[in-house]
Amino acid sequence: MSSIFTKIIAGDIPCYKVAEDAHNIAFLDIRPLKKGHTLCVPKVEVDELYELPEEDYQRLMVFSQRVAKALKKAVPCKRIGSMVLGMEVPHAHLHLVPIEAEHELSFANTPLSLSSEEMMSIASSISDALDSAE
Image 1 (cartoon, helix red, strand yellow):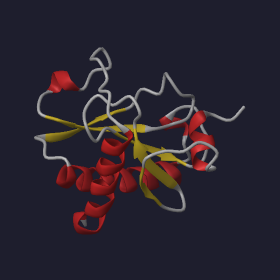
Image 2 (tube, helix red, strand yellow):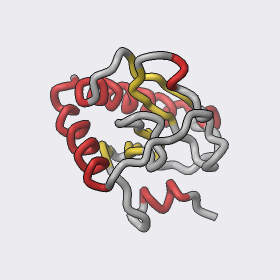
Image 3 (cartoon, rainbow, N blue to C red):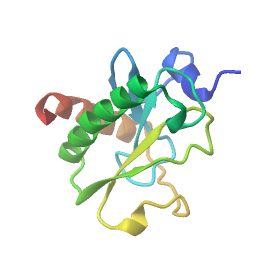
Image 4 (cartoon, rainbow, N blue to C red):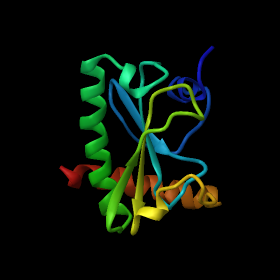
């Protein structure tokens, strides 16, 4: 059975896409901890991040670094927090979250409720910052 991420990758479910290459996709989390909370997802479907073949893992890390740099330009913050949990969706992914303090990087926190317009604007800002994030 395909995960929700596989359906997003296939275009069967819409997302607020930030970046995409031949091997990975990045899109905004629809239940964000902070504005700009982005998921970096390999297109190959494996349950856990560390199950990825080494080459795919390396590609995801390089892709995520590029997205994180753009995210930090688009959403001012002290740091981009990174988190690997993967309990909610059985498809490897990395959370990138703009934070000011460590306590903000917790799923115990109440997620934000942002309008579609806000989500589109944030995704566009991050995408626009990709070219200047090199």
